[in-house]
Length: 213
View 1 (cartoon, rainbow, N blue to C red):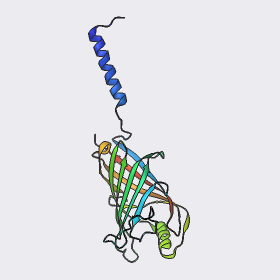
View 2: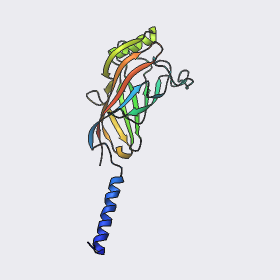
View 3: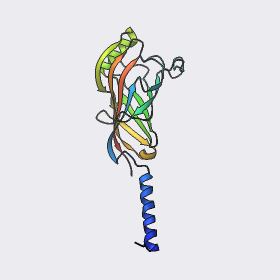
View 4: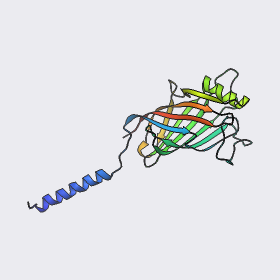
């Protein structure tokens, strides 16, 4: 079959469009979707530092501590982050701003800021107010004050606000997440905390993600 020059040009152009479509990056995240990002502790931890008030081992050895600085009530974590299927997809940072002291008999609540960078996709910025809850709070207090370790299985959300219904807020994002909004919860599954501050846990950031188109 002999093709006319016009028909041949059209087919070449169509093939080019199809090839570009096949090669173009596509987003794994719909306009509205539930998305989970997961950190496995300690396997995914890269660095952790604080002022000494948290019963968690600071790492790696020799990391700059926040003790004896103007910011002893802060905590900084850097970690690998996984998708809901367990595949490592990027990096996350968690910055916590603890209150100097909780009110007697009251629930200690503080601000936590998460950044989640998904390689090749973009970055999400999250903010929540957070509290440990009765069970994890007791485990942490006993580890800090009495050097008592704990082994078991306990899962709960530490998010208490600032969005109604004990949800945090998705502040925004870049790349595929540009214009992102919505809510999230941080859910921790604690399995052990040693008297030396070694923790085994799964941290899940469960997002109700809205993306602008």
